[in-house]
Amino acid sequence: MINKIDHLGIAVQSLDETVKYYEEALGLKCEHREEVESQKVRTAFFTVGGTHIELLEPTSPESPVAKFLEKNPNGGIHHVAYATDDIAGQLAQAKNAGVKLLHETPIPGAHGKQVAFLHPKSTFGVLTEFCTDNH
Ligand code: CMX
Image 1 (tube, rainbow, N blue to C red):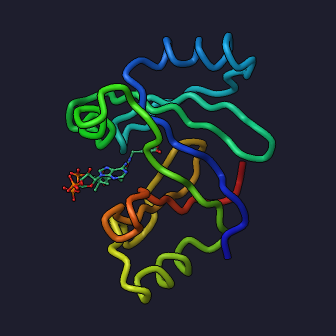
Image 2: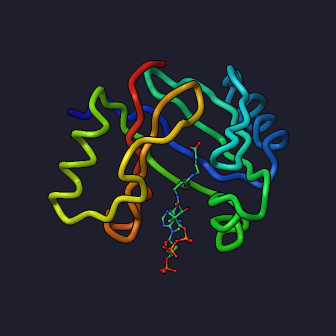
Image 3: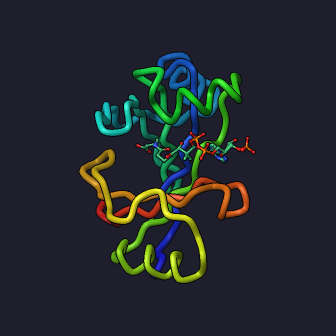
């Protein structure tokens, strides 16, 4: 079962510049920064209600986010992440429905969460993440 939208991932060219915008223009507070080695990104998190905004800056040209920014140089919404207590069950349900999985089993993400992605070509254009519900 999906419990809630955990976060929206937003690709950015500069974490520092974008954090400044979220803090100064929107009045939100950056609560957490973390580099996620496995995904080659630096992240910054904000909380809005029970949901988070995750800013993503690539740390390498091989990062999936670097490729996204090549195509979308202004940045933008990169993925929607759903919190669940059962990633394996959600992946199985999606696979049975004919969706292409990017991960057959979860991998480590930010905040010590396990994460797994569905290919945007089989989710009507939205890169979709399942993540554990522990934050
Ligand atoms: N949202 C929607 N569509 C996207 C997309 C995104 N974020 N990223 C790529 N696409 C589209 C491209 O525009 C392209 O479409 P066209 O063929 O119409 O041009 C197509 O997907 C490309 O597909 P591909 O060649 O199979 O894949 P890419 O090499 O471009 O990589 C993807 C795309 C989604 C497979 C890759 O980014 C990936 O594996 N992502 C999962 C992991 C991830 O994104 N990690 C970063 C965040 C980690 C975190 O939150 O900590």
